[in-house]
Image 1 (spheres, protein in one colour):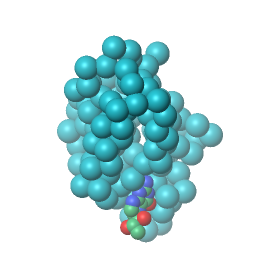
Image 2 (cartoon, rainbow, N blue to C red; image 1 turned 30 degrees about the vertical axis):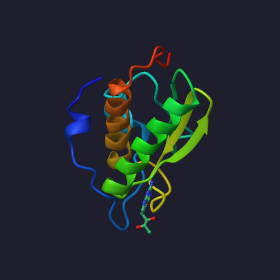
Image 3 (tube, rainbow, N blue to C red; image 1 turned 90 degrees about the horizontal axis):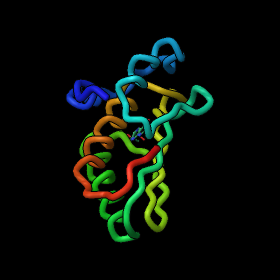
Image 4 (cartoon, rainbow, N blue to C red; image 1 turned 90 degrees about the vertical axis):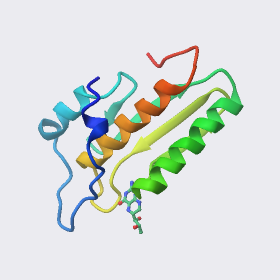
Length: 120
Ligand SMILES: C[C@H](O)[C@H](O)[C@H]1CNC2=NC(N)=NC(=O)C2=N1
């Protein structure tokens, strides 16, 4: 996982942008942690594991703050000990570089948690 993607700006998609094709996003996907996969060439998906609900909730709130700051929002599913995230660009109905930057930022956030488990 290269930290360079996380250091890039989250630039929103422009009107008329086409979603990235698998060839176009392959390099970005390689830069992400192993937690992430692309589903149906449409969105990124990952599940982060934690020791308990409270820690999962804290991570969820951190992701929420990141999303608000970057004005680019994931779908988040909070469970006991787990946070599921889906990330895509709604305005183009698919994947944009900004989704991969956000995923890399979430990987950075997760790395700060003293979680016992990592996602396989
Ligand atoms: C109305 C608001 O500006 C838009 O919904 C923004 C906010 N957050 C967003 N988040 C995501 N993931 N995709 C978008 O297209 C998007 N657009």
